[in-house]
Length: 449
Length: 177
Image (cartoon, rainbow over the protein chains, first blue to last red):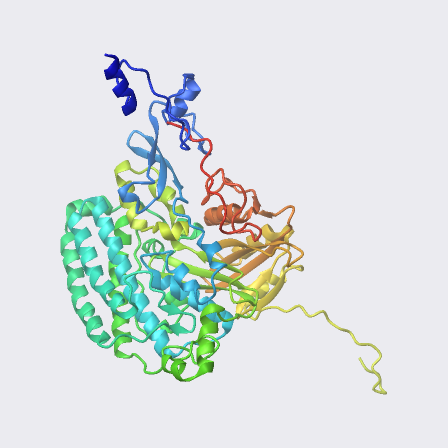
């Protein structure tokens, strides 16, 4: 008997009848049920009290009202979005988005990186549309430097950003379909996106986070045979989009789950600073590519799709139509790609060509200085915005004359669009929540930065 | 102002107040005496005194700037007499115009009037500026931290908030619920 007990003690497991071992407290806080069973403490522990600025209406009985905490780890919140939803039965009364779970201090990091390194930082913000982040950053630096990139660089930028818009919208369609239950849409959307990402990989070396659009131009010229790849995409994607329409347009479940759901009116969209597809779905013809054109996009013909209802269905249609329009732009860029240099001919910004480094000491020193110290940018401040797949993506850049930005701020479209969620979801059904979130297409890397 | 002999007896120097060419902007800025306008890399910037921040924003909205796309701040620690700059980017869809309004806030009392009553969409942006710089937006309905944890001490984007070597702060009042 005594031997048995001893062997159990050395194993350090608790067995009924033996003495309870002492657990050491962890950093996670007290992992035990408190002894205080007062009403207030129980409310707190059962999650009936939300530790925020939530104010209860006194009108309704407490039994009918419930706070539902959705996320931050929920498959249909597109990352780490957390929503506190106040329910009355099946109906959502109030919603509060809680963000910050993916905050990594990228704006602080940007102050430690040179202007040429900044692209590696900003490209990780909106990871579904990295080229747009790079473009906004590069355009802001170029505006402070007061340089113009050559036409070929501008055309390559448009080619890549418009293809990126297609791939980003394909993910939006795919996840929107999956959230509502059209699982095949999920597989189709990602399959077509793969073709575009393969082209990006061939061009930039990476599928995402390219750091390809840099201040002064682009990192490299397009790969040989790029026209064939783009032509393949241009041939394949419209066929696939037709398939999506066949799949969804006459599907009664899809239509009834999207039409009239998550409505944002035009007035609300303007008041809350919402941009991108949600704004155009609400009936406002506003696209920065038309109103404040950048990188020579005004020379290409395209239409801005606008719809009226501002519901989930309209936002989905806008995205499909925008893919068609982006493909139109891509086709024109492909046919009219200018010849010439793909970087600006300014030795302060552009490193010397590889061949020169082998034969010239000065070129080697210059190359070294440029990649260790970076180039200095005249003091000043500027704000440059581009139309990302999610809306107005702005870069506010302040320089104090050094090689690093004094302050870099990104106006993230997902961040502003997220404020529309409480409006779109108020007085709607709980089951429509995921449809509304997916139709706003928030990218949490963009929201939290 | 010369007499018959060609002798200039008096030179009247009119104070030159530069105004933008655009009628919407010049009409808006002309209403305020103490607001200065400048071009920064081809973009219209107005510098607004802290006390008139809200008034100017209301006037801007009345003259067609429907959207305030962004509010942020810049910390000019030990470089400028007024430590903080608060920057708001306005957008007029009807006139296709952008305008940036900048005001300053002192180090010991970084307070600016909130623009949420004028543009509800700046709610998150002002919360972010409060979180990152500690700018107090007076009249904001819910001025709490948005990106950092609620228990975080300090404001990370201030220049005297160091990078690296910052001990990780865990939530202290962790609750089991």
